[in-house]
Image (cartoon, rainbow, N blue to C red; front, side):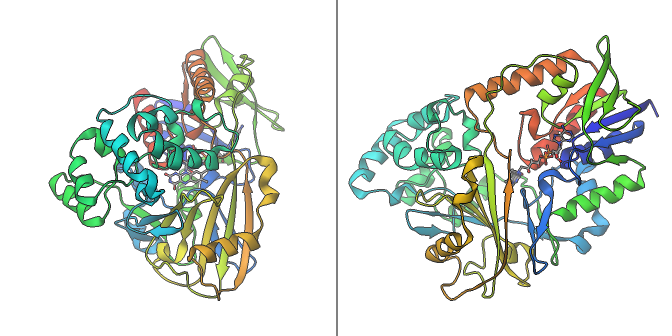
Length: 456
Ligand SMILES: Cc1cc2nc3c(=O)[nH]c(=O)nc-3n(C[C@H](O)[C@H](O)[C@H](O)COP(=O)(O)OP(=O)(O)OC[C@H]3O[C@@H](n4cnc5c(N)ncnc54)[C@H](O)[C@@H]3O)c2cc1C
């Protein structure tokens, strides 16, 4: 045992995994979580009928790093807990119809009067743009027509009608919609052999994709979903069991008042309503970095961060969902605010309930605009729920501070706070989705793992 005490701030999946990794080298590890429960975006909710739904993230996947995967998906417990999903199935709804073969918006659905010109623009742009701003990147790769008819309305749907879309960085395309379907199928498949076209065109059917995989095999992650009527919070229970076994202390409903620093070393952490400061030889910070700077009395730049609120309707019907294949679906259609659907029966691999979650992003003051009756009607109009189906039970969840509006000002602000925190003290690791380096579950955990390895 080399060190005495590590403190982990933030009890989301990143903080929980980090605590277990740190326990190998630290005698005492304490997790500080401001909410009443740990789990962050991997928590779940139940409706009045006891049906479970996920509150944020849905389908955890392996990272390829055994030290992490063995914590998340212990081999001897896989059968007990998880439905293993070797291939994640997703499709998308766009211009009034479903495409269950591809997650990417289909340019062939735009007004036929403009389609040929749009394809000409796309083919003429043979170099891969390195523009860091998404609007200009799309102009330089997809051309003006596809950018204005497909991409811009999606950006406005996700980040707000009045968003300064010209200042959005490539992070705004985190769901991958900057790749589209266009051109005849065989032409698109051939062009995808060139990197610039591979980056902007999707395969139009599974066969073309599988042929590519045969030519260039890749290791893809394994996806998992809890079996039975468990929800993704199962992952948190698995981690919590190990945390308790290891004697790691979890303090919920607790926040950091002050970080006590001597020279360039964090020495202890003063907590709200706890008289004695917690000794700290290493601080692992997965909460927003500006809060750590504040707790060290280091000035932060005026905040330019705008965070989107997620409104999630969790719905349970009396009849089966009409899509019995897809695990989740994108809704790129411009006329609805819905952007993603998660179909639980297909994730569980069994039909105990006919339940799904419907995600919408909006400004905090817009949450009352969305009502369950309208959402059910939209799902019926889209043909995902039968016209005859009745809603048995539901929950409307409102989750503030989910996705940042990724403007250049946001990136600069995040980078400043991250750099400032890392350079202010030596014994700190800044990680997690708030660290700003990555966002997806597996990437966040790999980043935490590498950061911990680097100081061992
Ligand atoms: C709606 C939504 C859907 C998503 N879907 C996917 C997906 O399909 N696939 C995927 O890979 N990723 C997805 N993600 C991203 C995924 O949820 C994150 O990668 C993951 O949750 C990051 O874990 P984290 O611990 O860094 O952050 P979080 O889960 O946000 O946890 C941070 C924790 O820190 C706590 N905290 C904050 N401030 C303080 C403080 N001052 N003091 C103490 N504690 C504090 C919070 O309460 C929280 O518990 C999704 C995210 C959202 C918002």
